[in-house]
Every structure is written in C-alpha cells, then in structure tokens.
Length: 206
Image (cartoon, rainbow, N blue to C red; front, side, top):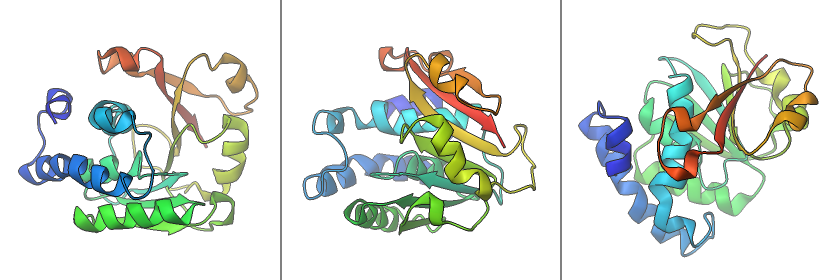
C-alpha cells in the first residue's frame, strides 16, 4: 500500500481502503484459482496494482468514460483503474471462465459497481468504448484488429480515443507491423522501482 500512496498521494479514504483490501482478497482467491503466479502474489502492489496504474499516469479517465479491459486475467489492469476512476465504467473480459468468476467475486467484495466482468472474446463484442486497455495479451497488430471496431468516435480526453497497452522490452519490430502510429510512454518516467525499467504503456490512437 505504501507504494500506491507514494505515487498517488491524493487518494480518498474510500480508494485507500479498497486498494488496501486487495492483498487479502487476491491471496484468498489465488489459493483457489491461480490467477497470479505464486511468486508475484508477494509483489502484488508493485507488479500488478502499480503496473496497472501506469495507465492512469498516461491518461486519467474522466467521468462517463467507458473502458474495455481485454484479457483481464485476474482483473488487471481493470480493477485498479476502476478503484482509481470510480466515475468511469469498466468492462473486463477474458475467455477463461474461472478467471472471470474470481474477478466478479473481487469486484463485488470491493464494492466496485463500475465494473462488469464477462467471459467472452473481444472479437465478439459490439459495444463501443473511449479506451481499450490490456496487459501483454498478444502482439499489437492482431490486437488492434480485434478492437478497432469498438472504439467510440466521441473523444473527450487529452489523448484521442484508442488503445493503452501495457508492454515490456524492445517493441521496435512489433510496432513496425502496425499501420497506425503508436506512441510509447516509459513507466520508468513515472515509477523508480527497478521492475519498471523496461515497462511501457503503448498508446495507439484509433
């Protein structure tokens, strides 16, 4: 929790309480359904919560924003972002039903009425969203193909509507496959822990 306070000192008491509950909830559910690797559960706040909130540093979501989280797994980046932006709506999807059930249980326990979790594939969705978020589900070019149809034309943020994608490593070759122009935000510019040295948010306007 100290890590979250360090980089987001203006949290409300409600937000702090929800972030504080996450460790116990994930330990409980991860023992039943493995949604986070065993070694990562001990670094939940750094490698999952704070990593997810890198997106919040790049583009805070305004009231009324609709966000799709594709391949959410155990609820990342969607659940930390839903705590951070209670006035935005989050649709978390994954093709694996048992992971979605864990996400539903955690969202309910945290009282996140701005989260909807569903077992489905992004390709099957017809809804529209201002932003699509994800964490290293696949290469960028096929990912853009899955979600391009779901991006709303109604843009009201500093960044134009599009994809905010958490990735790591050297992305030059992968991004060369894109027709769209991507912008890279280095998370080491926001967070000084060693884990973030190679971590990035890739923004693709659509």
